[in-house]
Image 1 (cartoon, each protein chain N blue to C red):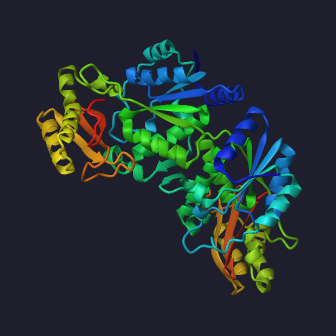
Image 2 (image 1 turned 90 degrees about the vertical axis):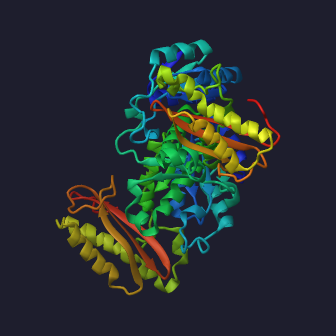
Image 3 (image 1 turned 120 degrees about the vertical axis):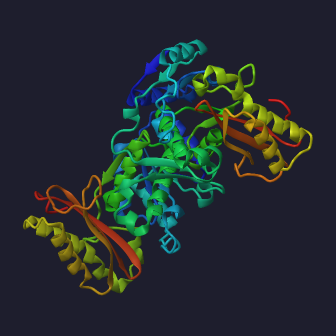
Length: 288
Length: 288
């Protein structure tokens, strides 16, 4: 496995790979790899001649007061795991290289970033995400880039950006990977205090409750929202950041579940912010 | 010469050319070609294996009330001229294809777009420019893209965007081409009423006066500005849109000419907006 730390070297390598007609799978990560990342990497290895993974904790997508400093960093373990699943190249630039002085260009996806995490974390979060992904796509120039459905809004925003700016890349969105008890995998799970860990399931349970209610033909968004909230907020250790029932295409809130909806939420527990979501409609699916 | 009207076809062609290791020169235009455009195309033909010219009147960079509808369109003549100078491919997409419904992504260069044309036309102008150029770079994927120094701010903004977003392309900025009497070539010159045409030189003369004053060691920006204004505004047919003496790196206004400055202005004459600029410092150059 090759480790490339320099942008120009990565670009030269990308050019080589294009000329060799290698299919190039790309898995952008912020490190602290878990089975979610690895599922993306495995899929990329399966589907492509070459797999490139980036490991870069992107300061631009953390808002002031967020957990940039405490975001888990596990570089040695990341390298080991990446190699194990068959990643060919790890791209690992410095923040100084990615964001040189006088840089002043941003990429923004507008309507899709107004709700959910864009509303809760601020518009700057997704500006940070789309800008760094645009940069990474120009550096790595993959044929397919892999994103996880856990960050449902991010995946949709990236898909929109790629279409709107005509990036010559396919975006592949892969299913959420969960712990045995159902908690969605996240690098941030490492930061949940051990005693609170069982209670981190509250959001997942709330979402499952919503799904069950839809199965029982409760389609009114307000009724669903209220019941899910009551469930999640029973535990005083939980702070509800947001919970929305939205169209999976526009991310606009819906009043009624008359087609597939995305139910997406964010909670804070022990100072750690966790997100999760579920896609469900009047005809299911009843499991994920 | 090949004409490609479809984005996907242009992208497929670009991929082919990369694999063939052809150097790809790109000349983005809004058509209504003149010797300025052709000088870019000739340079591209000289320097590259393949030259691609785009012809697309980009609605996104025209602000409400501007001249999108009256912007000159001379498609048949453009094709003839492009072929004559050796362009290999003309890319000519429709606005509907470039801007499909629900598109919502923009690219913005911040500080560099606040002054000059960005201030006069509004921030939306350069957002329209950078967004369309980002799209075109992703569609055409050139090794070098050519821009004219006549649009000095645009050239600088594009260079900044390319660096900041790591587009794998070199930006080449080529000198202003002028009529015999010194008027900077512009597609909009076709729209100047014939009787006003000689008076369109006012801006160019004002800029030359500024340069002469610097040669005579007048370095105070206010004195230069006042004298240039007085010259330009002697003619009641002229409306001065802006005139600034700025740093050629940051485009911030300067108080004193102690290094090379960009003197850039915009006037309106007979309803037509014209821009021009000059680079000069205490040591010259005294001609362009």
